[in-house]
Length: 117
Length: 112
Image 1 (cartoon, rainbow over the protein chains, first blue to last red):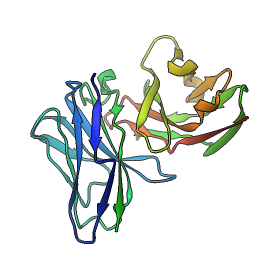
Image 2 (tube, chains in turn red, yellow):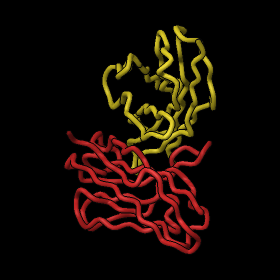
Image 3 (cartoon, rainbow over the protein chains, first blue to last red):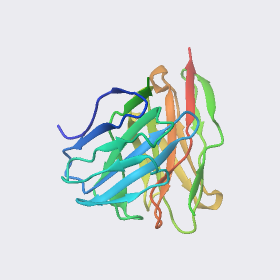
Image 4 (cartoon, chains in turn blue, green):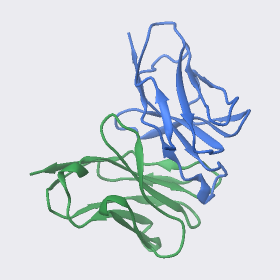
């Protein structure tokens, strides 16, 4: 049963702490994405990766970091530099990440809600 | 730069009534257009997509959307809404050198 999994469902962060959100896919997709969702603001792109060992900043990358060491995994670290991390984080993947390609259709995981203690 | 506008933040319809959610886009060439649905606390599920060809696209859950180039619109429709359709709906546009751009969403409330 193919799909995208995100863990944990809920995550709590203390001041000054880095936390890592997991995203795994078994769809054999080349491209993966991280979005942040805040009420009334839609989805904002944090980082994306079109291929293993390569990733690009999105619109709101400050305070976040990623890695793409394996095709199926794209973890997101929320660093202490992100001063307002409380949000719903969504991971997505697509067959490939070429802009303007029909293969860029994105499929989403169930999300992780990050809260600050 | 491409952009998407969903003019209605919140819509309320009665169960069994018809539904139309509006989406307008800005893009210089023929866009790729998507509609997604999100239930509370869940990820986004793809309802339908338009790349080319027939401008009336059928999707899952009984939804359809029509691409109108002259109006730069891609409105989502359903002839009879069910209570389970209550969710947030996102329109998105792609096709250019930018990544896919999402609208801010329309929340649908269904009343009995």
